[in-house]
Length: 282
Length: 282
Image (cartoon, rainbow over the protein chains, first blue to last red):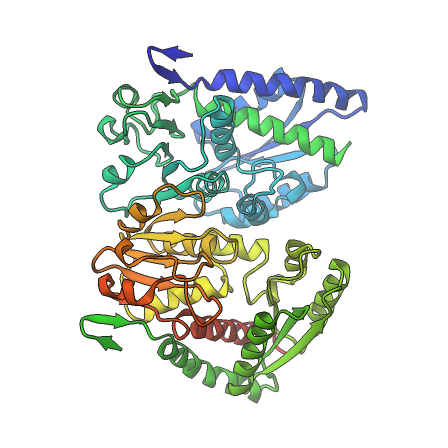
């Protein structure tokens, strides 16, 4: 979608293209008696998390895949959560496991992530999955970083030799997208809350990735004319981490919220689950 | 050591301080009947690799530790190498395993690294070790990156809020040191052979880490006045990746070669092996 000289990076178009490719693969799996199944685990009753899990389940259904929803109370212990994950690891009808984060504070999230079998880690949250992604050969890189790369690829936006500035350093977003951009030959600067003069660094960027979790954090005058702006944030009220209208003025290409990175993240999760079903069988 | 206004970051001083702390720990282990043992594996007859392995073995001996040298011919298969590693994994007298790299081209180096038990991965080369380091809780981060952090800590050079520019993106040096600096609250730019206008980026750096493997690659006029320069390179003829004399002119602090990062890397390896012996016992 082109808005004047601006390219609006429509995540729905990318997601639709990915799902189209999945349809044939799912059909062939079903001919073998295998229906790809994503198990989602929701701990507690955070309404946004519940919405995310529901969206993922619905997306599975629309493609003819199965989703299994495991819902645990907010008082679930780390041990009980790990036991539930291990059951899903053993369940041959389950091909992918997604633990919706954040989990309640009393749970050891890292221990829970590590309990997911690497062969079913379609969200790329285990240590081994993280490292395989950093080394450039992961089957299942973290879904949001992989979605960002898919958007850049779909719109044929060059990465090699470009300077990418990533704002955020979380283990599921800022860090893995930094290393994926690096593996795609970008020069990568990773910024965060302790960065001095963030605006000056962002102004150098050919590609800006906002993954900071603060509404409208990235300002229009931080964007170098012609830069590509990827907004991986999603805050209450359908607001991203980027001041969209202001950044649109300088950017050559930009993802909107909520129809940018979000739908591609879900499509990536489905793609990984189909891939896992192909590898694991029934 | 101060040279005029310049701080020469003497790796021998850092290494000596680390070894001093290890002496008491080794003594206590020996009282329990445990002598920390590092197994080194050398495949083929590359003279530099043989020298490195010998240096590591000698460093063990000087501290009263044991080193076990496994030497395999250049024609060793991946399978045979992995079998040798598995034997060391099972050997209760061995606490740390170091596979000297590079290995000959026909060997699947990644598969060999992954065969090392995480509990004995004192060189931080496995995927799990890599990710634990990225997440900030590794027992054994890669030795050269950990040595760089130890030098900065020893000389009390601040990292938080500083802009670090790392030149190099290898899985054992550029990538892990980038993430360690990031975890220490630096803003980190990782550069490489595809970086456009490297000199301009390096000129922004408060901390420069050269890990590129090209003699005297980093030029004096790339260094911002007052920057800290860490040379992790080691090229034939005792030459680093930094044009030392030229960079000294602008830097506030700089590591020489060969008495900078090198000795601290070896001391780090010894420290990790002692730690492994404390954890694994005899």
